[in-house]
Length: 514
Image (cartoon, rainbow, N blue to C red):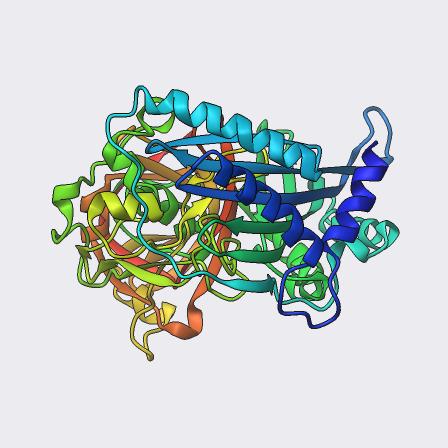
């Protein structure tokens, strides 16, 4: 059964080289849903036919207890799914149903089920659903790539991971090392009663190196990680990850981390690197500007937001902070051609020089706000789940052309440079938070010094972003992704990227964590 479904998916999503239009077989299946919805007088209908593939590969090196040998443990996990979901609006209410059996007959049946659900929802609907207009597109879009990562032999992938894990382990004080790669592929077809017919192929690839060092006499262990920029790309991106070079770097830094003294707590200036600040942006800027949080729709699962409808036009950050939402940045994880409302993706300003301007929206949410168009933020994580508002890529614009990280450091008398992700906590309104990191260096008298440890900082979101007084220029701008962003009930998972340059914050409260 699974083999038959996979073969069917291969045939459906195949297209001639260079094709700019969707598969005719997909269009025929999509038409079955739209025709059936018409019989029930649905005011709107869309269908998504989706094939998902995931591959997770890893190698772990660690000592065998009681011997001088090193154990090498490879792991390979693969999963896939194929099916479709139908949304309808009947009597002003949404209905949704889905199935893993992709045939015209099943599509017609499931469309009927979605209509029944919509009619039931209409009986308790407080106001009818309205959608802002959207242009109808008939297009095919793919993540730019040369080689599909799923076509690369597994042995080649495992050999690469073992070699970089071994590089990390070459220092005898490194207790264990882990190297991983994760691949994701999403074939998706979307059709709607408004004339949309859109086929997309979305590829994502990301990896990680972890090193753990142990000081037996002191009874402590320290870690250091390298996470290359997660990307929407093909296998040709893997050499750009520079895994071997960074394996050597984190091998030495994890050993230095063992002897790094703990931070002295207090108010300090911070330089936050892009691979760290991306998570702070994610939690304290991107999530609070999701409209459904402000409206209270997400309160039960992951909270609301300190930003409300009345906050539009108010200052929430310093003039150095302009945040943009988009789903078009090259290689960013949230980058696609069209969202799951059939809206062509673009970019929009969320915060303009510290002033809050725009929420993230879908077609339905844009109508609630009275906006003329959606910001293209509708997404479902599979064929079996309902599209709703999901975060796009959100990035902080860089500073002036000639500003360097060294310029920012030179302006600090007592501070800390923080690199990489660590533990974090943030409250239900995205207002009070605490963030750690992966590695920390002391800054004294305008110069970066040695490594320190056990660092976390805490602040209130608007105070923190008001304390930003500079970012490095475009040459230092980098984007990093998060691949497990959870939202909704039932929970859906999103992958997006956040970009920034190294950024300076003044007089932030720093804690010692050990």
